[in-house]
Amino acid sequence: MVASSPADAMLHAPVFVHLRTYGCQMNVLDSEILRGLLAARGFVITADEQAADAVLFNTCSVRDMSERKVLGKLGMLTQARTRRPELVLGVLGCMAELNGDELLRRAPQLDFVCGTNQRQHVPDLLYQALCRRVAVAPVTRHNAAQLERLRLALNGHAPPEPQARIVIGLDAHSTVDERIAVRLQPWRAYVEIMRGCSNFCSYCVVPYARGPEVSRAADDIVAEVEQLVACGCRDVTLLGQNVNSYGKDHGEGSDAFPALLRRLDAIADLCWLRFVTSNPQDISDAMIGALAACKKVCPQIHFPLQSGSDRVLQRMHRRYRCADYLAHVARLRAAVPAMMFSSDFIVGFPGETDADFQATVVAMEQVRFASAFIFKYSPRPRTAAARDFPDDVPTAVKEARHQQLLALQNAHTLAHHQQQVGTRQLVLVDGPSKTNPAMLQGRSAQYFNIVFPGTAQLAGSFAEVCITHATPLTLYGEQLP
Ligand code: SF4
Image (cartoon, rainbow, N blue to C red):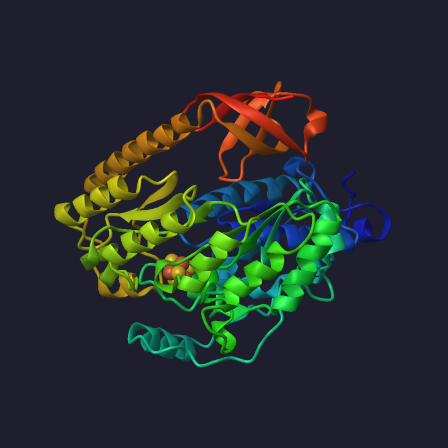
């Protein structure tokens, strides 16, 4: 029900909030935490934007396209505001962090902005906005000089200075119980093990939007996973921009993340453990040893190569060569033969020649990724690449390279899928298939998307499925008795 006055609504009737999420798994988790925070304060989360008293955007600045999507949607809702002046609009996340003031200037109908590291303030800001006290969050502005010093130090390969340990993720306003109450799939969960990034890849805004790396205490992470598992969670994905450097911000070595994996692997009733993202320069023997030893860690790794050209990797400030990357893949495959690799690629990075691009094609042929996210380069404000390199690869060339890599990846994905035909796969069932609700959809340990006939009551449980045929997107099968 939409009340006539938002302030009255807080007092007398439910206030419906619609939260839209853009971007990566980090934002998906932030939105889950936000929904928990809002629900705990009495707001009602709704999937129906039209019925909402407040529409919030959890935004992403990693690509120009995501920002344009948010701005377009915001423009449409701003028109809706003329029909429904009580509608509250808020922008959260990376766009708010990086450009909050500019957003408020360009969209005066916006009620508030709130940056990535201030999510605990969102319920208060929303309440204030509902009361028509337009509020601006104390957006965290990371000290620009401090960030620049860190970036320069890292580009000179100096380690960052150890920081005081900061416990993040759960706070007094955000408990696992509150999050569980709003989660649609209690059998799967993301768990944040660190925030921010100190790598400063030259094309990336994340270190500016989320600040430098800050790791959570291992005891807190283990406690959170134990609590999730006690509530029925079976498949946990650990999130960090670079999980391999977990713990380094407070002086721990490269065995901190492997040690965390081993502790989590010992949790009874947790079935599958995943992690993302794993950057090539920080992979260690201890990490590979843990992947081989931990039986619950799924044979699947997101391992972004970005480019097969050493010249481009250097301009991207990626601290590995393509040969190093291929050697890591070989070691990982030797340790875990079933390992499936996925990657990110950027085509049309400034100065990328045909030969550079061809090196990427060759690397893709060598690894044969199970899946890949392939993006056309777009300069992001504040980044070193935007500042130092002209965006000089013509749009048509970027587009042609993009299409070529997409076609190659589709062929590799289909080949991986076809290899699964005739195999038995254990599937954690998510519920009816989005494209065919008469079928069930779920994920295997290697994160294959598997569709098979079955009843909706299987959602949240494991089923054994024999794969009968494959397409580039999906494996199809029959449930085994
Ligand atoms: S590792 Fe590089 S690409 Fe990934 S978040 Fe950090 S700066 Fe961005």
